[in-house]
Image 1 (tube, rainbow, N blue to C red):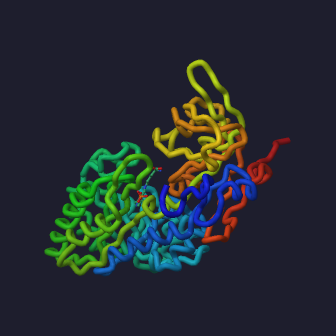
Image 2: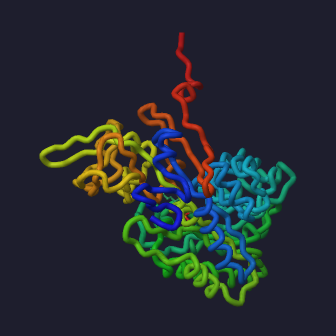
Image 3: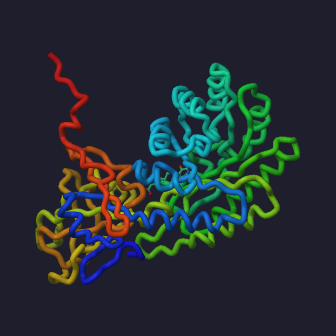
Amino acid sequence: MNDYFGYRENTLHAEQVSLQQIALQFGTPCYVYSRAALESAYRAFGQALAPRDHLICYAVKANPNLAILNLFARMGAGFDIVSGGELQRVLAAGGAAEKVVFSGVGKRADEMRLALQAGILCFNVESAAEMEQLDRVAGEMGKIAPVSLRVNPDVDAKTHPYISTGLKQSKFGIAYDQALPLYRRAAGMAHLRVTGIDCHIGSQITEVSPFIAAAEKVLALADQLAAENIVLEHIDLGGGLGIRYDNESPPAIADYAHALLVALRGRSAKLIVEPGRILAGNAGVLLTRIEYLKHGEEKNFAIVDAAMNDLMRPALYDAFHAIQPVQKNRHRARHYEVVGPVCESGDFLGHARELGIAAGDVLALMSAGAYGMSMSSNYNTRPRAAEVMVDGESVHLIRARETVAQLYAGEKIIG
Ligand code: LLP
């Protein structure tokens, strides 16, 4: 819980609005975001990086709802995208193409064309083969593609292996030792212009030291490039700053940013960062209603109307999300397995949670603003949840609940 999600008279609120009210009005499962929380996280980043030329490129994958992209765009954000689809969302939301960096190991030629046509800031190139394809595509279009190489600094981000990306054995980025020769080749390619360097070592990182270790390796490479007259306009240090889900104590945005500024002292290149989770994670909750309680000999189950398809993180990473009753202190507390209706044993949202609840009560899965809705699926033909944005006392539906008809609209029965 934080300044934006808290209890008033035993009812959980988002800003000034009761989450009980939102569950009634919009139904469940329903994602609820706080505009003030999103904006305050972004502002904290901006203020901390203000001493130097910088660009905050929000990692769209964390939560790509147009309303969220639009809020950040209006605050001056750039965007880190990983697909042509994300680029189209950014443009639809009023984001500026000139502030977009394009990451990802598998950019297709059509996605490159889309991004070149839009005029993005930079392609973060992740392999020699991708670099060759980009040069060819840009040449065919009579354009010059701005490029960074995403370097793999081989540092341990000390996070979950599925979201650790900066180790030698990872599929991401260009091996540190190969970066210099590849930069030399890039500098000689007719349709590429080397503009920067990039790294991203993983996600939900709760210490500053891996970021600094990575930055130092990237900067050492930038120095070697400068010695060969390959001068970089920007240094992109990726995203990855963790949030508090349970009892983690990640660095404050200001401390993380300060450490980056210290590492970059004396350099004029623009600093780019690609934060996702830290901007959106604690700005959203997922509301779900309890369908049934099942009290057993060994375990008690709270069977709720949200499931692994709505919030995949517990099933996929064994991730922890705090679970709060929207109305508290109403029933005697017991320990519950909080589970969804999907036919998989992995379909759980929380283990052994102490809750005083009854069927019909609404629960809030906290810290669900990042990688919640964006990773949701339609497994078990479950329409995806509604999304709502609270702004002070106002509530806006920012994505309607899907209908079943939408789910099979593209399907055909054969004759
Ligand atoms: N830049 C690049 C190139 C990335 O791949 C990512 C995230 C980010 C920036 C943003 O990272 P953040 O600041 O959000 O940590 N689904 C996982 C997280 C996957 C992160 C993938 N890359 C989860 O739910 O924990």
